[in-house]
Image 1 (cartoon, rainbow, N blue to C red):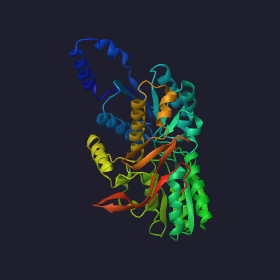
Image 2: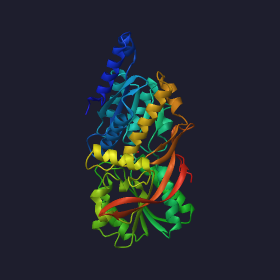
Image 3: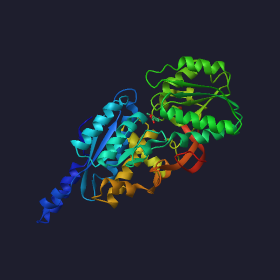
Image 4: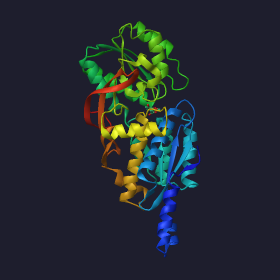
Length: 396
Ligand code: VNL
């Protein structure tokens, strides 16, 4: 997956032929259009490969639909696999992309530790770094060159804390993955749920590497809580759902709630009816009812048969939007100028309306409450309420 992706060489050639037909200066004009190189670092293998698959697919689709030149500059997507679990590898790849490939923009970053590892490279090289997946709130503080196109955990957790407190779930057991976004999510839920009068029965944390959810879910069941709050990163939801189902937590009357990572659309079809009844809050559902999303889902599923686009995929799509629009504004912009152009940008994504907060370079967006329901034999996350303009800190 390390070869550059150039979907419209044909377009470039057509463009070149068009200029050549005019007779003069074509070579000089073309030689001056330095390529825009996007270095996309993603987990393409390993336990988080679905995140890499989803984001690389949406970035390619964006290029196919929006053309692979920006202001006359050909766009080159260079996809690198960092395996998802080795921050030193991510950092080394970022350095190589800067020094050897002379990339214009760094992008991707499937998990928080990987975004942390690359941040100093972006700062030193003065290149924009678009964080498309990792969701810990502090990430953009690690470099003035970071702009986030995905989501934050406080943003996606606050609405479910409110919903739980208003829907007679008085006693909640929490389970999160033991690393920065899990702690962000746990803190947001526990603080807000308690402030609203709720009781936390117990809080447990599972390891990021090789987790075994069975003993934790048994403990949750034995606690007889009203609900199990779960945050696990995308890719882990199926294992959690299997244990939840096999141990009969739903049958025992326990509701599963959380931010929507656990019912990620990529894995949801494989969960089947076990996922029905889960209530989550999230910025994206493949079932989101808008013309933009219908077109997006249809195009993604056509280009990638059997793959339902998930929330990470829109992080990739909207990250490409930021890169394209910033370069249209500043065709020869420096890293600083491109970041400046991204601040305050506002647009309609397949997920709904969104913008970049100029103060934090972080994403402001609508967060939806959803219930997982069976529709024509397949589970989908059906939105039933929304909170608009939710900032990175999850103020609702
Ligand atoms: C992170 C957060 C990663 C939420 C995720 O999937 C996720 C992170 C890989 O910040 O590491 O769903």
